[in-house]
Each structure stands twice: as structure tokens, then as C-alpha cells.
Length: 271
Length: 299
Image (cartoon, each protein chain N blue to C red):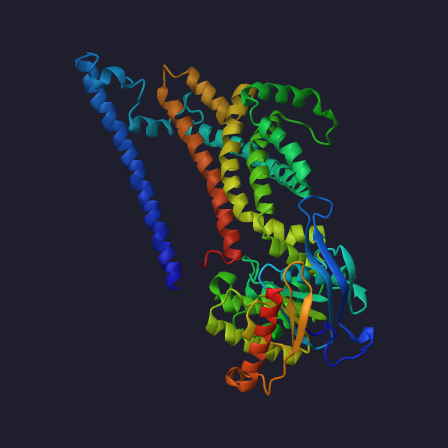
């Protein structure tokens, strides 16, 4: 079994890491008979501009991990730092852009006003946030849909608005929890290509939760495989593909990476 | 363009349906009256419809045209017409109702926001909010008026009796607003709330940008209920508290003179109906404007 040491970064200094997790533990209802340890002894390190997918058996605590990283819930034990800060501090410093499986747009706001929401909360001036929102909608190929309301957009378009919204304030870390899980296969592949383009253009660091192996392989520079509950990172697999275009899905390297992840996942599930 | 013309056509159609409905109602009334009267006049056997349905002479059911004509008549020669009296009374009552509605909305929303802060507060206070509505209005109305005359001297403005009636209307309106408002404020999904947290939004920002807008679809039905309740509350409040100037007093007066002129009471009742419709219509209009701004009419 592989070690959880980040690949290709032996002895990387702490300040070079966007995210550093060591010995993380999360127990729900700790002092009660129905206590559940969702995560235990989890280590993970993410460098700037990495695209790390986290994959694992369903119900293994992937979303819990993401919410711990995002500072939405507190760990029971262990260390977690984002750019040298605690998750709470990082959240309050608005280091995170989050995208969930449900786009979570506000129905009563047009696309552009949805993208503006975080900027509004951060006190940006109207003209500045409008300009940024226009730019972000163009980035996700939704220029011209500014004044459309969520109900007038398809699922994929809604998810793109959610991505634009998450990236609008240039967060240090983009946290995505199965963002394409509710989309059909065609839209999903299109969105993956789109996300890669955005990732390249914005130089964002991405942590991406998924249960689709091909999706993880196509998108990521590294795939972290989680074990079943209590969860930890059981293996990390660097992904090297000759190119990141839709065509790569038909290449030998792609298949090899997919089957490697699949085998690792199977061995993790077996234990 | 096309959509605006269809909506105009729809609106015209709706007005037409309403007019047809009114005419049908008048015809039904007249028809029943004619049949009932004919039966009443011929026989009174137990199996005859007319003997156990309400009697339908001119005292019980004045002719429609007489009721309409009553609008233009004046109780005293050369004095104010019944129609004008009813209109003035309706305005007076509408003002009481509007003030009561406004105050009830503010109080209801405030209660909802407070109860939103903790489950414990919700569990502890909500039963009392519900219990408050079981107090009979007729019983508290005179108390409120007496209080208003004797105990509200500390207020920076002079307390008038109609304000007591507004207070009674407030008592009826705050309840649906508080209950539906709380449900609406609690309606955003956990994801939406977590998203706001991830932006490090404060409690007030979450309230203003997420919870309040999300509660509007829950609030408008409550506003409709509150609008009718405020008008009914104002009329009942006027009657039981003996406040003059509004529809309640007018109904009481006209009821006293029913034997000599039953049409008047019908006019006042029609006035009360229209007042209620105006109140609900105002809420519906506000709802349309708000939803249009939110782009929810485009669907």
C-alpha cells in the first residue's frame, strides 16, 4: 500500500502547502452511545495549483472531510491548516470557494446576481462586483445569460453559475463535493473539460470529491483513495496523462490509470 | 409583446368571469326569492321547500334593484347618501385595518426572527403564540379600548379609539405572519446555509440575503390571511368596543333600523365585502410586483 506522503514533494516546507492535514479525527456525538467515528488518522497534503480528487466507497466520510477542510464543522482531533491558518480562520478569511452537488443558487436572483452574492457579502462596490461577475460568467461560457434566473437554466448551466460564484472572489482553495453528480453523462463530460479549462486559467487549487473513477482520473493531478469508515487516506495515486483533452479518455494511459485507481479502491474496500 | 397581450387578454377574461359570476349570484338570489315567495304564499305544509328554507319576503330578502338603489338614497332629506356613508365608513375601517396589518406584520416578523435563533425559544414560545389566538376577540376588544383611553398616556402621540381597533386587528394579523414567517425563514437548505457560512457571512447577512428572501413565498399567503383578518378584526373590534366612524358602527346602526329599511344593512355588508377584497387585492398586487422583480413570473 502506498504511503500518504505527497508524491513528488519530499520534504516540502509547510508554507508551500495550501492544505496540510495530519492525524485528523472526527467523531460525531462524541460522548454518547451513538458516537460515530467518521474519520480517524487522516493525513493529506496539497500543494498550490494541484487538482486532488478524493474518491472512496460511498458513505466513507468524503463530504465530512470536505466540510472539515472548509471549516464548517470542527475536527475532534488532529491538525488541519490552510495556508498556515486553521480551517476556521481560513473560512473567515474567505479562502474557500465551495461547490456542492446541488448548485444551490438563490432562485430569486438572476445568474449574475448569484455570482455577485459572495462579493456583496464582502462589501465590494456595485460596479466592481458587476464587472467581476460578468467576467466570471464569460469564463464559464455563460456570457449572455446574465439576467436569466436559475429556473431558466439547465442543470449544467446552474452548476456553471455555482462554479463562477465560487471562483468570483479568487479563493485559495476550491472545494467541490460531487459537483457533477446530478448531471447526465454528456453534460458531465462537457463540464469536466470546462472545469479543467477554468482550473488552468485561474491557477486555483482544487479538492474534488467524486465517486466516479474516470472523472477523478481525467481531472486530477493526484487521486487520493479513502478507506471505509473510520476513513483515512489509504493511497495516493499521481495521474500522468499525455494531455487533458476529451480525446485522452481513449488512450492507453487513461485506461491504465483508471484501472490502477479501481484496483486500489477494491483493495481498500476489501480490508 | 406577445406575452403582455396574452396577459391582458387573460385579465380581461378574468374580469368578465367575475362580472358573470356577480350577475349569476344576483339572478340566483332573485330566483330563489321568487320561488320561495310563491311557495310561501300558497301553502305551508312541512314537505314544501318554502316552509323550512328561510322565508323570502321583501324584509328578509330585499330585491337586488332596491339594494342597488339604496346606495344613492339619503337617510335624511338632502343628507349624505347611504353609499357615501358606507364608503366613508369603509375608508375609516380600512385605515384601522391597514395600521393593524402593518403593526401585525412587523411584530409577527420580529417574533419569527427571534424564534429562529434557537429551537428552545421556538419550543418555549410558540405554544403561547398559538394560545394567544384562542382568546375571544369580543372579550378583549372593550378592554383594549379602555386601556387605550386610560393607560396609553405615556405615548408621544394622542391615543385615539380607532388605534385601539387597529391594535385588535394587530392581534389577529401577527399570528399568521409569525407562524408562516418562521417556516419560511427555516426553509433554506442546509447547503445554502453552509454556502453562506463558507463566505463567512454573519447572522444578519444570512438573514437579509438568504432567510428573508426565502421566506417571501411563505409570507404572502400569510399576508393574504392577515389582510382579511385585519378587516374582519377591525369591524368586529369597532362593534364590540363601540368605536364610531367605521363600517362596524354602520352595520350596528343599520341593523337597528332593519325593520324600516333592510336594504341599508345589505349595502353595509356589501361595503364590508368590498373592503376585504380591496385589502386582499392590495396584497396580491404587492405580491405580483415583488415576484416580477424576482423574475418568478417569467415561469
